[in-house]
Image (cartoon, rainbow, N blue to C red):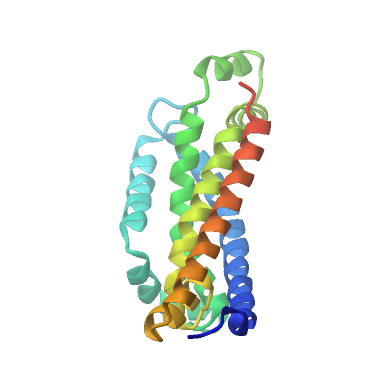
Length: 220
């Protein structure tokens, strides 16, 4: 029977790899996904800058990328990953497919959150002479900020599970550690311990996201 404390250095390293992947993945995907989702909202039929044909194309692209199983996507874009980071192996390499997978998810969630903004508030801003940029920053984002935080929290939790696949390309992470030690080496106590750690990590992220969301929610 393996003593958990003997594996603590590997566990700490695995957690570090998971945090590294998540920080960069969520950071990159949020920087690209939020503007993309906002654009989808603006050009959808009946919206402020409606462009039905462009929206139809972009909407189809989002749906196609979101429908790809992450493992298939990761393998399919290996040449692109190698072009971006110089290698298709390692923790940094995993960030590329994780980000590509997360961007359309965030975009779709942001679009849906913005659709929940009261249309009357937007019309009041338009009547006051606000331009599109001002409406986005001072109305849409302000009204939807709580929902946006919830969306980012949801994506973060979802992609912690996706990062488990990182082990297939040497990316590491706590999920990969659980599989390598708990499953392949038949050490159930290690599997249970790491699963508990993952559950605690998810709870911390969920609680933090909820607290921030509640503080930003104008309805409370």
